[in-house]
Image (cartoon, rainbow, N blue to C red; front, side, top):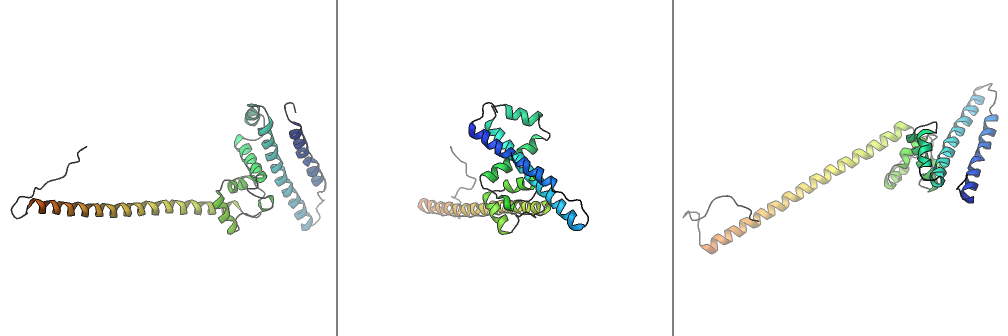
Length: 209
């Protein structure tokens, strides 16, 4: 704990107290005799798993803030029993909960699914909530389908924007062409030139810098 502020040590101690809750939960496992007992055991363990990964994320978040520069990266890279990718996702989830980007009550019991929810933009999350996508029972397949739909809509929107820009540029070029033709006829009239007499020059324009 060297180098940590008193408030940081207090926060870490408070987080670690959660282990007692997990121990109490595990000791409450029943000797299953019927389907209801199995359901209760499995449900309790599932809840235990969710609380565990949230607590791990909190610990990673605190470590990132409080450890000296370089120590956190070394810890995550070589001293933890999971990959740096998992560590990053767990920490990002914990930060999102702390910042109230998402609420614990609406989260599914999978850090990887929650991570995908967290990485949505504010607008995308608003749409997801409107469609009841962000909820504890959401499945990975359902969320992935929603994200694919968003990306497809975005790509189609870009294509529509591109086509609209091309149509606008086409109209501008046609208007420019008409103005040039009108100006050419005006110059011809001022010079008293006529196509019948062969006095009008034919050829292509050259851009002069």
